[in-house]
Length: 533
Image (cartoon, rainbow, N blue to C red; front, side, top):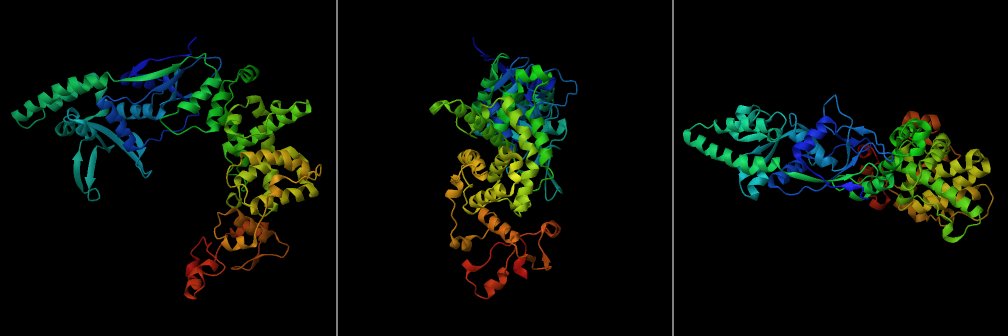
């Protein structure tokens, strides 16, 4: 039995559905982000009658999927209906139309340089009747005031802030296009705004042509849709998000997993509520807030850690049951394995990971890694979190900590966590805990492969280098006290925070250049204005 149908909606229908609340968004969809030119180009596409692509919706009220809805950006109706449809694909296009073609037509957008703008869009009724090139210029983007100025606001170049001024310029506000009565009223005003009988005659001809060729055509413009039945499975919806999110940014694993977790029936039957991954992540962010070294941990990092622990537990169970070969699952943090996690797996491991945040932060501070900026590799911190969670309190034991430190510095100075890290996370989880506990003498692969040549010290010239950050931390951690050269204070845990320690030149850059010091021997890591010393 088909799980979808393919209706077509007029623009007016979509606007009405959005404004009433019949059509809304799943709450985890990303914010609206289209820039001014993309919005204008969309309106030109509609004017020309060209296809803008398919949108995809999901019927609400199903047993498998229960997304929390939110209004489409720009809808201000305070008495929204319960949604009948959720917009899965086409958010940017539909939101652009809702804002530009209804209400006051003001769109909060940005230019190509990401500068914030408030724009309104108008259609030049005469150019709209022209050839393709004329139609490209027929959609005009103007400031929300309708006034364009030059000379720092002193000279008004264009003013369409009132209907009378719009009539004179022949620029119709785009929202008027989709309100038939208002459109005809506006066109009659345009027809009568000429200054001569000849001009009024010409405007009458333009009005008649515009009414039949443009106003009617745009009113009949249809947008094809794929409407998913409410009985569709959550796995199918997750696949939809991953494969067909064509008009915007590709959704990451967090957003996709939000979709699959939202309709977990067992959780709903047990709690009477739907699980909201975003709300659970808020708990994680709160747990990270005061832990400076790991506060930059991302939601996708956290999900990778959960996936590693989930798949490792299943792997160990399969081995204990005597299974071999393909019957034994792989420890994995790959995208597909994260997306295949059950909510029960997540709820089993996520709290345990959160409980170990403070232990990981303390460990890093003991290594003189104090802030997120000082962390050599965020990906290795994910591994450390996984390992610490597996070891529990044993991670604090002296002998265990010594081996964990060896593993950590091998990863940093060996510069091993800078690229594809899914396999490294899996191997670390499988190899490091047993080795750190002394249960095996076989060293982890990351320890075996580690190497650091003395010559590398001569090429470490930027603080974004992991090995540079590692050397920096090791210098502070040495037994002989390290002092701040400017204030002659010993650097310890307290003074590090008070002095806001950073990396600067050993010798001023300007002094080196004046004295002919070879460029390769200069310390080029200054983050301040040290060259003026």
